[in-house]
Image 1 (tube, one colour):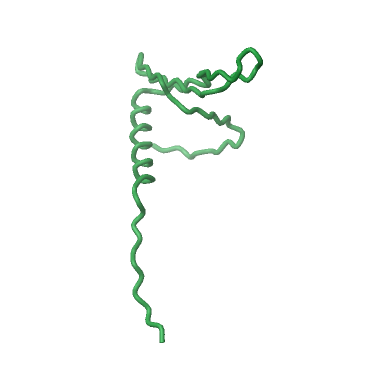
Image 2 (image 1 turned 120 degrees about the horizontal axis):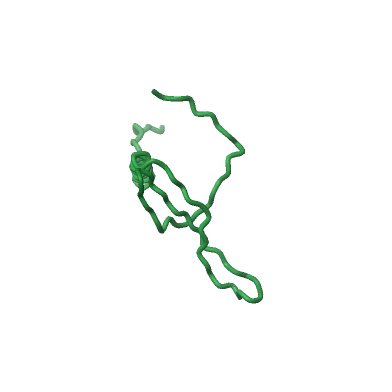
Length: 92
């Protein structure tokens, strides 16, 4: 059974540049999302730190399906597009 997707334009968006930890327990997969940030305070002097920005938890089967869908999509993006040649035109 499929359900309609209802868009929520106010849903939070999360920017992460790494997912260093994945754990599975009790049938749930948890993915820890992190982001590299700089401490630009006088004391931090621009030091880089990796901060946890979110943890995404979902049923393990859904996580596996999502991972496969992501790989399929990204592989399509990496493949060069097929460009069909046009029929030659005659100029007189």
